[in-house]
Length: 121
Image (tube, rainbow, N blue to C red; front, side):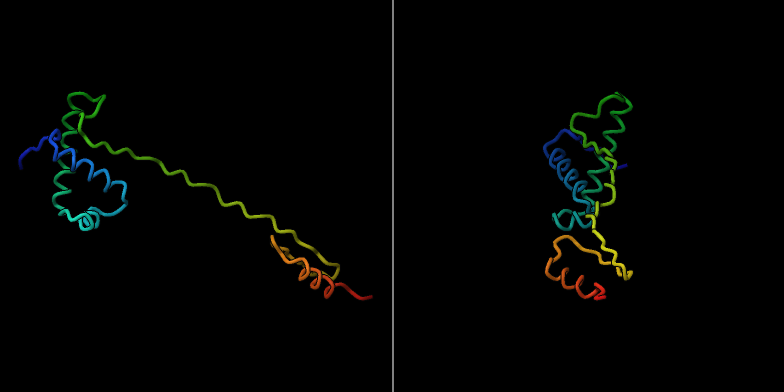
C-alpha cells in the first residue's frame, strides 16, 4: 500500500479546502481539476487520505471526526411545490364564446372583443 499522509500539515489543510470547493462546485472531479490546474489523480489521492483519516478516527472515537478532516454531509433537497399561477378570469358569453382575460390585458382591446361578440338583436 502507498504511503500514509497526515491530515495535519499545511498542504493537507489546503487540499481539504480545495476538496470542499470541489464538492460545492457540482463538477466532476476531472472537470474541477482541469479548471483548477490540479491533476485528478492528486485530488483522488487526497480524497482517499481524508477518507482513511476519517475511518481511523471513527474506530478510535466514533463521536467526533478528526480535527482536520473534511466532513461531507448530505443535505436533502426539498423541492418546492408547483408554482402558483395567477388567476385568469373568464367571461362566458351567451353565444357560448369563452374569453380568458390575462393579467394586464388592455381594456380597450377587451371592450372591442366584447362588442364584436355581443349579439346585436
